[in-house]
Length: 398
Image (tube, rainbow, N blue to C red):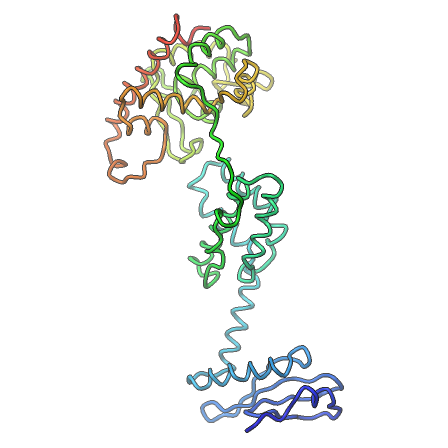
């Protein structure tokens, strides 16, 4: 049967009633310029009706497309009204599953893998950059172009690295949503940082070379800074730990008799306890710190707030005042240690374990840890002696 309605006829309707188009589709006219689209059909011998929306919000063309879809469902042996009801139920469920809800679930799921400061930094970034725009939106309705707009906006403010990390975290939230059946597919899978963001120059943390070390040691000994800060710089060099791990050091973590420092997992980047062998020079430096740390829990308390550790910028600020701004950073001692130890033929696995880097090779990860500790102790004793050899006098001398 040919369709009977047309746009012209619909615009001219002025009589309430049912106006049929064909194949069960009709418009139930209730008032001038307004009507309800219905589809009449039979399923399992029963006559049923399906609502397609209100005219003119739903046009004649759209109503016919919905009729075609419904009849295809009917031809497959399913009830179009049941399918429509389920689709509405899914839409209702998805409407309350917002991006912020899923993002916070993802953060909670990942929290055991991160240090507290990492978790806090990721949450702060999402709260500042993403939640105000997409937080209240159903995650199933968010389009790639919306994410692109946020990320490109961050990049335009000169924070290219932040933009790249933000994109990675948004994509991680969508992957989590797929795995946990909050959405059926991941619309962000094709958003690649290399294709979305401008190329940027990678800037490594500044680190001195071995040839520059003697002049630095002389400068360090001559510098009249805060004793706590100077002691921290010396021990940082002797242990090759991360600056944040050193600043938070507690006397309760130091086992002087066993000559080890046990850094608990929550303060480590990889969330696993790290045992640092302490050389004779490192132990001597710690003994000097006991005399100036005020008897508190912190090995390196702030000179201004004794109950707080040295601030994040203290060590780099001291290096800058010594003339090393842009040339060397507190984190750079790790690079110096790695370079020198590798160049002198020490086992790369032992060096990486001393740096507390995650082992990606499962066979190597299973390597006997006690042997690693024994070999790391030999390595750190060698490292302290090598540092001593770079200038006259012990490195830990104040």
